Length: 121
Image 1 (tube, rainbow, N blue to C red):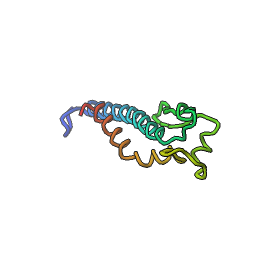
Image 2 (cartoon, rainbow, N blue to C red; image 1 turned 30 degrees about the vertical axis):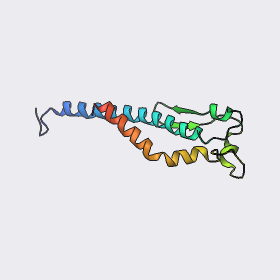
Image 3 (cartoon, helix red, strand yellow; image 1 turned 90 degrees about the vertical axis):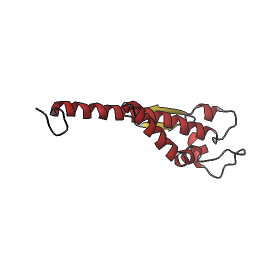
Image 4 (tube, one colour; image 1 turned 90 degrees about the horizontal axis):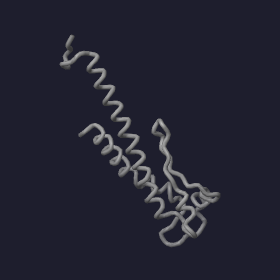
């Protein structure tokens, strides 16, 4: 039986489901790439004594696509949050927060491009 969309109801449902899966896969990939982009920007700002803090940075993603950017040292939170600390030129507190805020539009473009690629557009 055909409907107004020119296919069977089952066929349309299958195409919609496939499209949703492609969008989800593209968005997950885009968020991971976007997270790596933000980490790179953040690493240009992270306080840098011996490089341990910068090297500890990473991007992780769970099966649902929840993506996190983090630094893994004992002092990462203090270096990020304490705005009274003095840093070398170009380095700053709030290094990750400022990168996330400033790179928001770039990340949205990365995610959109990844979705389009997955959809073959």
